[in-house]
Length: 374
Image (cartoon, rainbow, N blue to C red; front, side):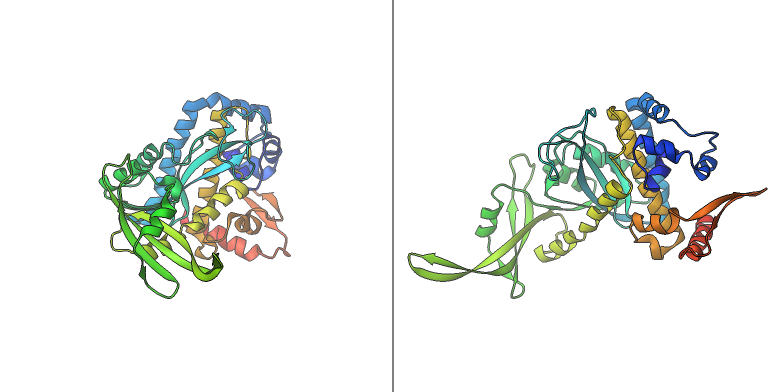
């Protein structure tokens, strides 16, 4: 498992390449290997762990992430929740057709995950079949996430896109005393927005709020909207030309009652950064890119890539705040993909770098800070 985590952090994916990765002398030293790990052995061990192993690994990741959160001393955190689609090619178990904006009609996995925004950590993730809807199981997912948080964290602010516009989720968060902000998703939303009474806040923006009760909701909730002037258009009505404004509409459901549509819109836009973190997990840590034909084994591989992402973030957070906000790929190029030679002495193993390496001093400084932090 550590071999998979290190390979993920070092821009290596696929079983055959991980086998070659374990031939590296530094990797063998770190993992106490006498020889490389054969890809068939690696695949067989992961499959043998099965669903029970995937659940056990998830519990262990909760423990590790909890330790990271405790060091932050936060008592109120923002949780950004989202889902992500990974297209697959082949006969992978559990892959199915579903929502796939990248390749319509192709089989995929549709994973769900949530971040602690203040630390950029992945708190929880579910590896799911491609036919799963965005918010499938969201209440159970959040119950599990909330139960895994350290006791010090008493309240959260949940933020998500329109795929999580769910009355049961709102009931859960309200009953637990948490805040939330979710973009509204309704078939008749445009008509509802046109019917509202708007209050201007400047030349281009107006806000509104209205009560709404969905069929499956236990109570009505206040929806707040904002419309933004985008331009004007000419309309020819029986030979008479008129100029009418064009608007872009946004609507949100939230229990932050002290904020109007404009404030909620600005707060919602901040969740865009979490989409960048998802892309890092998928494309820079290669989550869902190392696969077998077994669903539980693929679940474990997904979770190990998530662990690699969290370790990358935590190392930077602990050692150097200047590079904490850098992408993992930048961190990889500066501090992992280092031109050097592993040197074994009587007492320790060190990396001897080229004197021409541009980031040699930064690398040594980072290594020292990380050693102190750990």
